[in-house]
Length: 471
Ligand code: ADP
Ligand code: MG
Image (cartoon, rainbow, N blue to C red; front, top):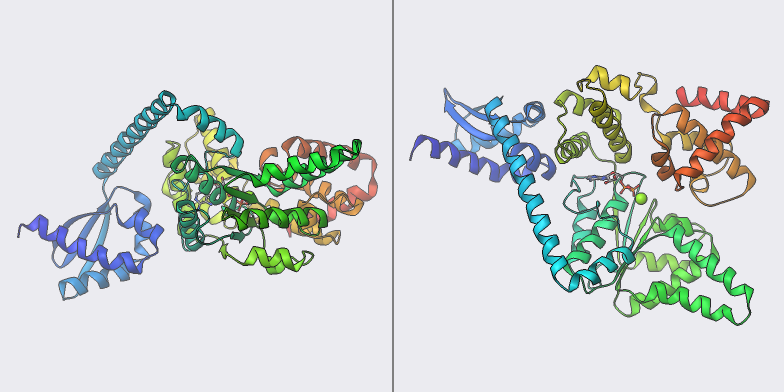
């Protein structure tokens, strides 16, 4: 056997072992792109075109050496070396793939425009309420979301057949909406004759309230409005309900959600829910709805580990054609360790900043851009909400919900103000965290800002809260 092909053969065998022993994201992102280079003096050397891979692979050094020794039936050393040429080649390939993807996309689009299906598709896309940027393609799979991702893919492939309903739950900013919309996206493109609808639970609530209110105007309209409401949610094949925890304790909405569920489920239609907590934590929801939530499949999403967070950032940088040095990626992934939305927010700020000012992206500069100081590093919007909620003795859920009780509304405004003042997040981002429009956030922020000047109690609260948050 030729020397090169022998080296390749050994590496292929090693990969087969590593595939089962190393987490898939790490394996796909960092191990697969390695190129076996030489096997001299009992040292097997691979090249990497990604600087960061060299560091990450150190963590798996033992596993790789062990696999190599197993294949070669003797102790073998292992070394990974960064290679500039390989790096350039990888970049070229990436650009080529990007260009090809773009070409493919345009070709598909043209085909669609030329086909009669296009009108239907265009209409469907607007009716189904999807944000097409959330796809399976750009969802990074790690140990934290592997199961949820796998079942979401299965549901998209065969809606209504198994896992019905699918109930995805997990903390804020961990990819629930992304997965939910990816299901819709996938079905929309691969099964265009199915009717998909994505709704935020809040819209469902508002829609119901509006239908009930309009029905009140004229006695005869009552049934008509409710029928309109019902038809809207029942005349579909796949219903995707985001943040269903928001309906908890709203008896009328819960009843209507139950009816909608029954009607769809009985006719074999797929339903997918997302929620910030599991069904058994819905304390104020009637059992009959809770059991419906639980009767299909429950899948949770956990906080991603640092390697997955780095993989997400690397993907973002690649997709946006921005070069971020490996130490910056590692730095950001270690600072934003609980919430991908915040990680992404920081990435967006940095890429916007670096494209406007021609500042190189270095850890030092990034610290300045994100306003990082040792003290500030753990201040997140969700962290602020938690502290403010317990300060005013209300629940985090209430703050994020439509609850209008005076105490809750007051706590919410204080939390919004502090979120803007104490983090570098944008109004739209903070809006997402509070389940509100960015205009609402701007209004609350400026209201508190001016109230502080005249309201001594409020000023004192804000001072105490700031101290607690910084503590
Ligand atoms: P949630 O609905 O759980 O609060 P989102 O789905 O809105 O969270 O995710 C927040 C942001 O993080 C989105 O922009 C989403 O695209 C991104 N994100 C979350 N998880 C992943 C992942 N595994 N891969 C890529 N992007 C992700
Ligand atoms: Mg969400």
